[in-house]
Length: 182
Image 1 (cartoon, rainbow, N blue to C red):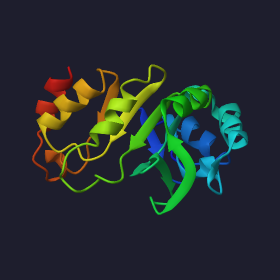
Image 2 (image 1 turned 90 degrees about the vertical axis):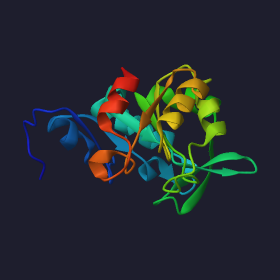
Image 3 (image 1 turned 30 degrees about the horizontal axis):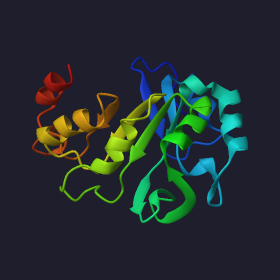
Image 4 (image 1 turned 180 degrees about the vertical axis):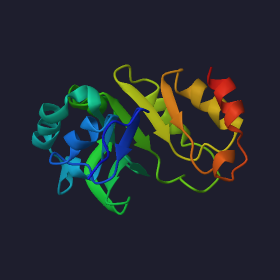
């Protein structure tokens, strides 16, 4: 059971589907992050997306499209990045899916946890998309990475930083990031 009346807005993800998403929104979440549930096998299910929108409204839905670079582009992965789908992150796909969600969270799984910097080609492609908000996740480990993300993403791509933050024992200071992003 989810506690009600949470005073700080939050976004929640993990195990979200069209049977439990409303409970999180009712408890105070501003958005639910949906990942593997969006798929029937290896194909995106427009039916599932529509049901999510009907249940909570597209303004409360974030699609997490984790992707791996292949010879054909950025292939969407599911099930903890273990299962390749037949779908690829492209500007055209984002334009098609924006009717079902408020934001996109794009994980670059190839660089995650390697301290080698951001997936520059992916960020540059995301920077050409002019629709919903896009947040990039994938090995931002320096202020230079943030600068590069801003440049390649044309100022349109947001960022999420995890273990590199000093709050989690990393070497990027939260206050410095806030100043940079202000």
